[in-house]
Amino acid sequence: MNMISCHYDANDVRTGILHIGVGNFHRAHQQFYTHLLLNEKDQHAWGICGVCLLPSDEKVVNRLRAQNLQYTLTVCGRNGTNEVHTIHSLRELIWGVEDPDAVVRKIADSSIKVISLTITEGGYNLDKETGEFLLHDEKIQFDLENPASPTTVFGFIAEGLRWRKVKNGGPVTILSCDNLQHNGDTAKRAFTTFIEAQDKDLAAWVKDNVTFPNSMVDRITPATTPEDIKRLNKLNGTQDKVPVYCEDFAQWVIEDRFIAGRPAWERVGVEFTDDVSSFENMKLSLLNASHTLLSYPSFLIGYRKVDQAMEDKDLVQFIRNFMDIDSTPFVPVPENTDLEKYKETLIERFANHSVSDQVSRLCFDGISKFPVYIIPNLDKMIKGLKDLTRPAFLIASYRHYLKYKTDDNGNTFEVAEPWMTSSDELLIDSDNPNDFLKLSAFKGIDLRASEQFVELYIQFVDVIKDHGITPVLKSIIK
Figure 1 (cartoon, helix red, strand yellow):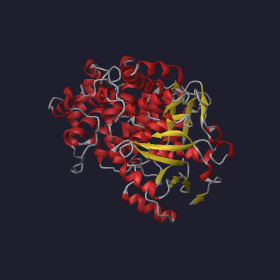
Figure 2: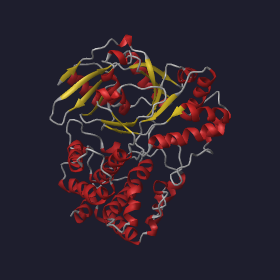
Figure 3: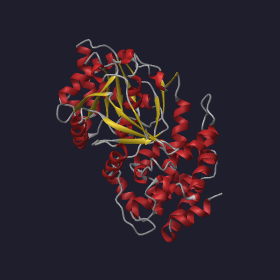
Figure 4: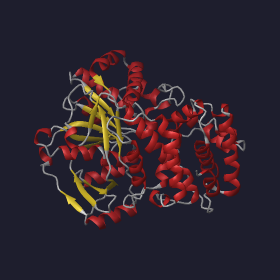
């Protein structure tokens, strides 16, 4: 274990970035890169003001405040050697439930040049079929009608930008750091649709004064359980109430479209480009899609840790076949990237015993993940008359996971699907497996229209129910 010290006085750092969503991934990724950059004396204007907007954020807010907003990040090496960083880049922390006006004031502050976001794939409030912003959502309607009392991220940013405009606070960049293809374009569509519906004058100002770069982010960061806190503190000789741990791989590729200036993140390994499409396609189609492919079958077999699942040779072969046969034909390779090496590294990353990610984390919120990670390439596979065995098996496994909530060993579990609708629940409860194919997770594609897919899917549904996951998995390994 190596304890890594910073070389800057945190008290000299000013905030130039406001970040909404101070979760584990943000603290292992964007905060980490910024913390490294602050060692450069000419970059001290880029400290981060964190913003939390949910009632459930109270615990992490209080714990971070109790330790002067500092926390430890343990970077778990694939070679078994860990690095421990004490992160100082979080300079302010505002809890919107406690002080909503402070959030608005900070967005309006001219010193803030970048507003970054990790609000999850489902947090952009978009229709899964059309991609349009859902203006009729109850919370959205409240914020549209009560601009001075925002409750959603859209309401807060609109009100903050309105005051920024009034105060001549200058332009600002909104930078999505969520796992969405074209995440900047997605953020732009969501925020500008909301603002246009609420305030046309502000919408005109935003058009000229706000940019939305696309970005691609990558670093496996498990949830931190109470047992992890004890383990990490014992390992590191610390008493951190909110430690984070992650893998030793990290990547961040960003379109260089910052209207008000930006940190020199390229000095610490961030790649700036004119187009992130090939990077994000590669990552979503291989890493994120493979994580989803692994999640439900391995959980139903009985695995609860990803590295344990990766000791199962059948699962490893299943994932590798998916990468090579199903995904690679649809992945444009970024310049200077060895795709075979990238796939080999993914297998190593999944198997990292030091990280030991939770399978339940991969299973979380499939409703939001399928439309982003699985459906785009599945649509291409269907149109290209490709073999649909693996995606049909995955979706049959997902149905079994949601419907029966029992693994092959008889262990029951609860599912975590925050964006599941009452209509989804009826489709899951139905004894007709074809009804499940109308789930909101699959909007935008009619899986029932593919005879090959339906035949495979129905076959897998029946065999999984009668015999469990393992025999089916073995039957489809090539």
